[in-house]
Length: 141
Length: 180
Image (tube, rainbow over all chains, first blue to last red; front, side):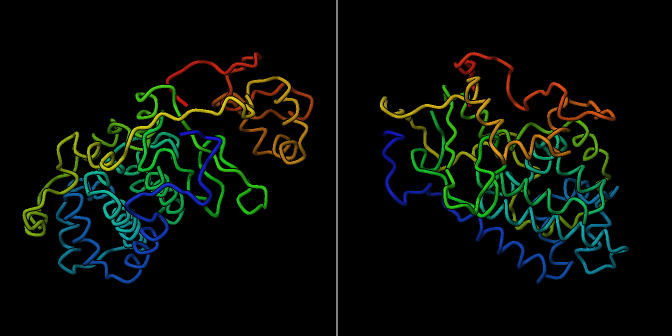
């Protein structure tokens, strides 16, 4: 085909709508209680990866959250919410394996840092937007 | 070459500046343009596409390996599914590329081609009001410094600037590479 003759209104067809996927993941991240979010990231990512993203030293703490145990500190709960939000969006558009790879790999939009380290090491309110933008770029690629 | 779900189609306009180098930074203007990136080879196209899923970061891998796995809740939650974190190392690439196609795109010979490496184009862009404002802003000055350099006091309009993302070639021909 020729670049000079695009069909008017023709846009790339992908099997998901980026804005809809992100909006649905956002709704779920503010609607679903923390234990449900903990269970979801455990199921999608596995205990070790999810715990590492949350800055936890073991999987028992996350397992406790999944069973309704207390989450100490607002940052910890916010971090779980961001992890759930991004993981849900990427897993819905692709698969949990893609979500796991996203969290582990160095990311060009995060100055080469892995999203896992950014979320685990920084205050979640400071990095939430950057992580969502990195996830959006993945979905839009 | 391009790899995508519908590689010949135009990208979906979004209500914000795009993240890529030549995306239109003025998403709400009437004369906005759309940018479709291509590569000279399939390899180049795949490298760009998979840039969002680079191999595991070494520090991140070490951090994950250091987590003590002392809870079996995940095993009870999985319903026989393999969590993404335990998938085969190639699985995410297969999942990410599923449904995409490879296409060869051709530029109409009668179309205008603008090279960002052309000195005349660069001089014209530098004189544009919006570009000038960015170049003279603190953010623009910082972006034009070599990586890791700190802005010195008094650095301003008179000092020589480096163009971000450009090779410094002054010919009208872009460098040949696998990338876009």
